[in-house]
Amino acid sequence: MLNQDSIAARMAAIQPFHVMAILARAKQLQAQGRDIFHLEVGEPDFPTPAPIIEAGIKALQQGQTRYTPACGIPVLREAIAQYYHERFGVRVDPKRIIITPGASGALQLVLSTLLNPQDEVLIPDPAYPCNRHFVRLFDANPISIPAYAATNYQLTVSDIEQYWSARTKLVMLATPSNPTGTALNKDELQALYAAVKARNGQLLVDEIYQGLLYDGEEHTALALGDDVWVINSFSKYFGMTGWRLGWIVAPEWAVEAIDRLAQNVFLCPSTPAQYAALAAFTPEARAIMEANKQVLKARRDFLVPALGELGLVINSQPVGAFYVYADAGRFTQDAQALCLQLLEQVGVAVTPGIDFGEFEANTHIRFAYTTDVLRLEQAMEQLRRYLPHYY
Image (cartoon, rainbow, N blue to C red; front, top):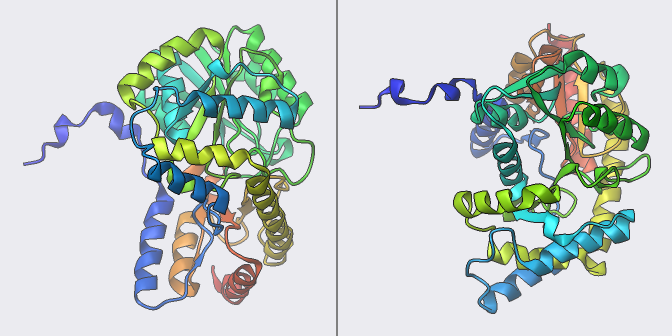
C-alpha cells in the first residue's frame, strides 16, 4: 500500500504544470474528433532542421552511441565557444562550457552546485515555474518578486536592493523571458550584474530563447564577466526540443565541481544528440533557423494586435521567444477557469498565469504562437465569438 507519509516533505512545494492538465484534456478532445488550437505548449511546429537530423542519423550509423565525457564531447564545447565569438564577439574558454541533458539538466546542475539549505534565490514573478521548483528541490528558498509590466516583467536594481538578505545567494533572470517574451537590454543587465556582484552574490541568466529576439540588439550576459552563469539550450532557436540537449557556461572555479556532479547525476548527455548538434552551427542549418525566426516574428506581429482587439490587454510588448502574456482581467479573476472553458467551448488551448507564479496570475493568460498564422486567425475567430459572453 502506498504510504503518503513516506514522500519527502519538500515535494509538497513542487507544484504540477497546470498546462499539462490542459494539454491532456486537449488531446482527449482531439481523439474525440474535436479541432483543437494548440497555443498552450512552448514548442513550435517546425521540424528539427534537416542538417541536424542528417547529422544525428550519420552519428548513429557510425556507432556514436557510447558514453561521452560527463561535460560533453570537446568538439561540441569548442563549437559553442566559437558560436559566442562569431555571433556576439565574446571569447569563452570551451572548458567552461558543460553540455547537459536539456536546459532542465543545466538548471539542476547549477542549483545543486551553488545552493545550501535555506539559501535564498531571487526570482521574478512571473517566471518559468521550474526555476522555483528546482530551488525548493535543494531545500533552498525561492523569493518571488512581483515583476511589473512597467519594467517589462523583469527585475530591477531596486528589487535587488529591497529583497536582498543575508541569506541571498543567487539571482535568476531570463532574457528573453518565458512567459512574457520580454528581454533585458545591455544596460539593464549590466546594472543588475553590478548590484549582485556588489553583494557578493551569484547571477544566473537563462538565455534559452537567445536567437529569438525580434526587436533590439542581440547580446549575451557572458559579455559582463567571467563570473556570470549562463544556461542555454538547443531546444528553442535550434529546434531540437526532443533531443534533450542544453549547456551551461560556468565560472572557471565551478567547472570541476559540476563535472563531478554530472558524472553522478547524468553520467553524460545523449551521445547521438551531441553529434547532431554539431550541425546546428553550419550555414545550412543557420539559414533554416533564421527563416523560422522570421516566421515566428510574423506570427507575433499578427497575434499581439489580434488579442488586443478581443479585449485582452498586452501591457508589455513581447520582443522575443514565442509567447504573449495577456491580461484577461476584463473577463475573469480566475484565469485557470477561463482557460478550461476556452478549451471545452471553442477548442482553444492556452496556459493560465498561475503556472508562472502568483503575482496577478489569476488575470493573465499565456498564448504561445507555435502554430501558423492561418490557425492563429481561426483561433482568434473562435475567441471573438465566445469571449463577449464569458462573464
